[in-house]
Image 1 (cartoon, rainbow, N blue to C red):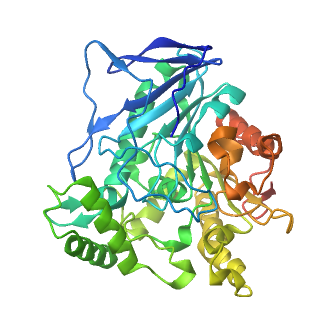
Image 2 (spheres, rainbow, N blue to C red):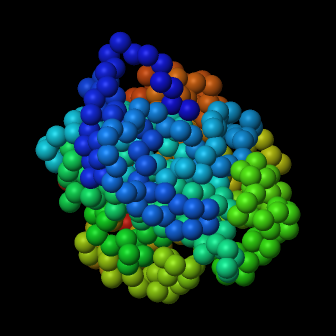
Length: 435
C-alpha cells in the first residue's frame, strides 16, 4: 500500500476536474491525486460515470483495492500487503507536474495480476517516478477483477465488466487530461501482463477507438487466448456452487473464498496452471468475437503507434520453486508459446493494418541474476520506489541505484514514445530492440 506518512515537503492543493473540486497533495515537484473515483457500479452491473459533486473531495489517499485473495508469500515479488478490500474500486491515481495548461504527454497504466489481483493503492504501481522524470501525466487505473469483474452468467453478470470499467476510465482521462496538465491528443495506454492482455482487447474494440493514440504492451500472455463461452460457463457454475449463497448478497470474504476454491478446481496444469479462471470472454460486450476483433484491430491500426515486447525468461517467474523449473527446455518453450510468438503475431497484425509498431526484448544476462528477464522483472524499473520494492526476490539483492540505472533506458524510451511516438529504435516488428 502507498503510505501517507507526513512529509515536510508535502502540502495540500486543489485540482478542479470535470466533476468538481479535488484536494490532492503537492509533493516533490508533483501534484498527486489518489483514490479519484471515475465511476460507480452496483455488483455485477455496468459502470456508471461519476456524477458531478458540490464542495471538495479528498484525493489524498486510496480507500483500498478490489476484492482479491491474499498475495502468495512464495511469489518472486515477495509478500505484498494487499490492504483493505473494497468494491468501491473504480478509482485512479494521478501524478502530474502541475494541473496547468502545459499539454504534457499522458500515460495510462493498466496493472497485471492475472485478472485477479492488484490495485492502484499498491505502492509498487506508484507512478511518481515516471511523471517526474518525463514531465508527463501518469495515471494508474483500478477496475474490477476476479469474479466481480469477469463472471459471465445470463441473468446475473454480463461478463467483461473489467473491460467496461477500463473503457469508462479512459473516457474520464480523455475528458480530464487538459485539466490535469496533459494533452488529450497524446494519450498512451500502457499495460503489463494481464493489463497488456486487456490493452490487446481494447485495440480490437470499436468502442475504444480514439480513447488512446499510442499503446505499450509489456509481457502480454496472449498465448492464453480469450475465455470461450463454454469455459466461462464452466467457471461460473463452479463459482456459484462453491459460493453456496446469493451472489448479489454474499459478503466480500465469501466471494473471495469461493474464488479461491474455484481457481483450485479449474487450475489448468499445462504451462504451470497459468490460465485464469476469470478473464475476458470473446463475444461478450464490449469485446467482439475473435474474427471481428482482428478486423477491428486492423481497421484501427493506421492511427496508432505501438510498442510490443516480452522478456527472455517470462516463465522463470511462474516456475520458480516448482518441479517445472527443472524440466529441460520447458521454460523456454512455454515462454515462446504463451508470450513471445503470440506477441509477435499481434505486432505483425497491427503492422499489416498500418500501425507503426516497435518491438523489444528484455534479455537474461546470466546465472548471477536468475530472475533478470523474468516476468515482472521490469516493473521496478518503472514504478514504485526503494521502500515499495524492499525485499522482493525478483531484485535478487540488487541495490536500488543498480535497479534505477538498469531501468533508465526503458523509462527514457517509454517517455519519449509517449511524447513523440518514437521510442528511439526502428519500427520493425521482425527486429526487436534489446534492453
